[in-house]
Length: 219
Image (cartoon, rainbow, N blue to C red; front, side, top):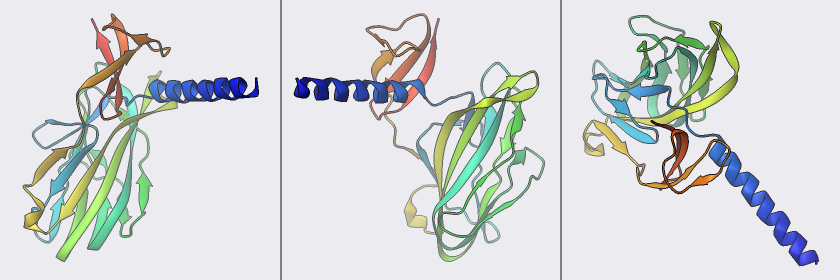
């Protein structure tokens, strides 16, 4: 009897954990984009190795790709840094925001909450000042908040996360992006966690082969 109870308890805990994972998909209201407006998918590693006047620029932007205004913030963390100094001055394109110095591994910042009208573009203004044999890996993540009467809602929704790798090493690869995600769909769920055998009209929670989950509207 005790073994049966233990098994049922383990099964229940597993189901709760699985449901928790399904219930917190990546919110894709805001997206990272490059200078040409191309979406940089969640999980992408962006490589930047073009040095201009002793600096390498991320050239990464954030835009509201949905059909409704919302609020958002940006969080950045230095994963590694060598012979370099970094900063991020996040702001609407054409403006200069508060600059956050990032000089050591583990340094992090979170911006204020910004309004995000549809199609409004924000520039991360992330850059690294380099010398010889310099490198820096910076993780960036968007957090989205609902628009409640023109004010940000209390609930935070984790958005896309990418990594920007700045390097003076031309052998690091072509200046561009490398995606590590798989777009193969392995399962679909309703909002309350019920597994679907086929796409269902409305919002579906889609799970991909690489473990990502996302909300998908099926018409």
